[in-house]
Length: 90
Image (cartoon, rainbow, N blue to C red; front, side, top):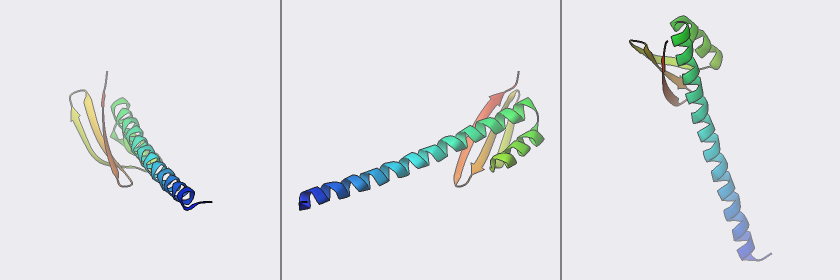
């Protein structure tokens, strides 16, 4: 093995680790947004108590809610991430 091929393997390994880290983070972001969507739908279809039960089951925290007519906006915290979602009743 030459020094050039060792460098190539090292750079490839670092690249793969970086890609895996970014992919994992985007998965966390998508999961947080999905959880916010679910909690907002629970709120609009039932009530805040149902949304809180779902949030507890998803291991997220509701940090804010806002109602503007038929539109409910919910903000949740999932680990270090914050996600907001809105849903409309009717």
